[in-house]
Length: 415
Image (tube, rainbow, N blue to C red; front, top):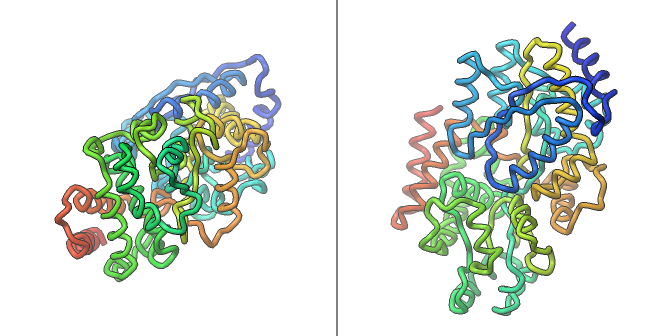
């Protein structure tokens, strides 16, 4: 019965042109953890389409690294849950299913032709226990290099010629001597954690990544040559941090590159949205490359989930929302603002750029891709890794042996 209700709602929602005058209005509480100007601007693309179709968007934003999982759980147990929520952790969707609140979207995606046009890594990310339960919103690579081309020309360096990060470290002092920050880094815990897993994938490929960040981590992977090599590279990055790094937000860090105060940043490719928002031109003012010598990349798929409210009017609005998010034209428009790449391979190419081309090349090679830890790892375990990485980062005297011992202790406590 519930499936028939959803398909009826789908038919009703799809009968509404995305930009038609609304013939009905249904408010949905939409919960997310975005807060930067480009993040909010990209959400506006979805909001405008949703409200043009008759929905009413009630916004609830709790920014990054603010205990969003706990907040969502509290909202569910407190009896005031959101109708739509941004979430990647599979555990949340399993909890919803156990409570009879799951809202699978696989039948919807099949009906509107989305499923067959999603890359393999996106399908894996949005599927939990064999069911598609997430609405993919953006595809990002967690670790890419974005650099200021004017600074590169002034200093006389060409990142596109680099074969490994050793080539960068070889010219870091030259860049610093010219008056620029060689490597802009934001010192928040989540940024440090992201950098660690991006470097692990780039440095070691699949040697230990899945064993560390998979659903069932392997304790023996903690003390390995690959982990020590990753930590050595991680320490080199820490040594390049400028005095303003601690607690600096990622977009403020990107602004150092945009304004020519810093040469480059290694972070998620959502950085591109900041450059675009500042009116900078790809290829003229800035450029992007994979981490030089990369053996693997971490793919983040930002996604929304739906809560089964058992309310026909809300189901209709939720179905409209889901169909809008994965619409190929909307995806192209959204990605152009967000700095992401479209989740659909058949999105119009007129808004795609050279950075999107890099991402799409990576999405064509499943062997090089690794899922974001948020989509695979036990939340307590991921938190323990971030805690250990944060200590290592902020204590230059901490050795790789100290990090390894601390992480082993956390493993023993959690598992």
